[in-house]
Amino acid sequence: MATSALAIATAKPLTHRFSNSKHTSSPSFSCSCSSSTPLPPPNELKLSFNSKPVAKQCVFNVGVGLLAASLLACSPLEADATRIEYFATVGEPQCELNYAKSGLGYCDVIVGSGVEAPRGELVNIHYTARFADGIVFDSSYKRARPLTMRIGLGKVIKGLDQGILGGEGVPPMLVGGKRRLQIPPNLAYGPEPAGCFSGDCNIPANATLLYDINFVGIYSGNAK
Image (cartoon, rainbow, N blue to C red; front, top):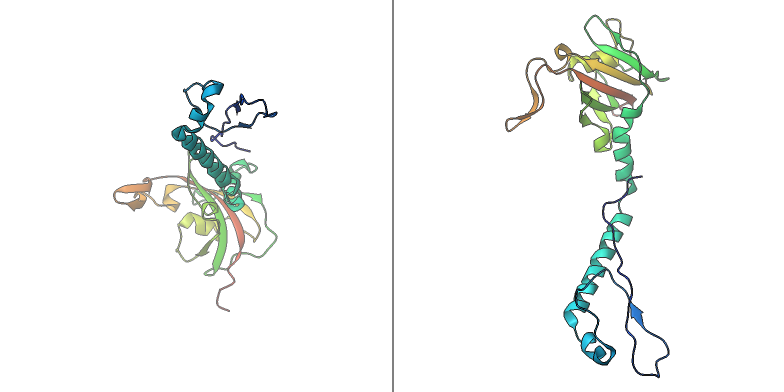
């Protein structure tokens, strides 16, 4: 488990001893502040207690430390779980790619046990998308919900249509299955860059894309 880079240090306790013999115990206090000013001798103790700037700085630092600790303790577990899932596909078992005549590479990490994706219907999938060098450029796990898309009607890139629906020697995916796809440029975005905004493009031209697909299920809102 990752540890936080934020460390809350506590200084050694500072102990003031009273010169009055009636005091049998020595009160002490500690804080996460430090001061270069040496402690005053016992006969000047009252003057040191009246030094408000140091005391205020001490209280402020303790407050900041407690606030930071509370923020770390109260971080939502859902965010951590999503982050773990987002990168989980990196550690999934490898499979040997088969290649269709179209150039699509595919292999099943897990063969599902549900129904096939109906052509033209909405389906729910989770996916992680990478470039050929393994760099992730998009993922439904990052948004913490599956993608709902219409399959088989050209609403998505050709490689996803063929890789999920099947065809040309590629078997259809079944609900519950996980499949790895290697999509060549002619089945992806081709010679044009994609995902462009203000001159910056997320996907370069002629990019080969790698997709890890998790077929979650058929969308329940499909027309009957």
